[in-house]
Length: 127
Image (cartoon, rainbow, N blue to C red; front, side, top):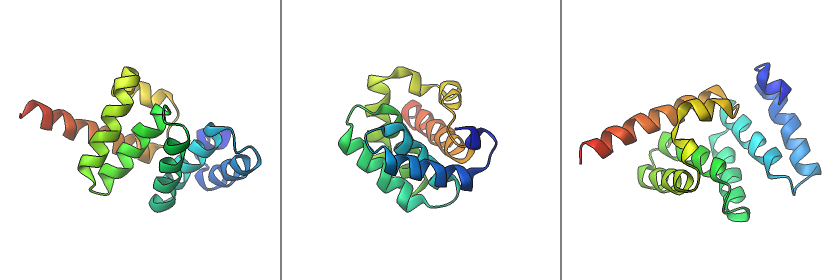
């Protein structure tokens, strides 16, 4: 995570990928690899990794929230909302952008999540 904090996303993504391969049972490494991939522009692989994590660890709410941001960015609005609602129904802290920032997500993912949440709040209040 040090490389992520230093904003060395390419290097961090490689390191997290290696860590995830060496310790496949530690979901946090795979998650960090996925969000790093998203930051450096590999949305397809990031999305696939997060979907795999959620299949393997159905209670991994942080992965669901991150996937919601990616899905929203790709125009998959209904799927994004489903992932978001599943995540926040189990961990209401994920509804707070300040909390998400404290999780050390990458800037692009935080930005996308914030945009998604703003649109979702507008959508819910216009009903």
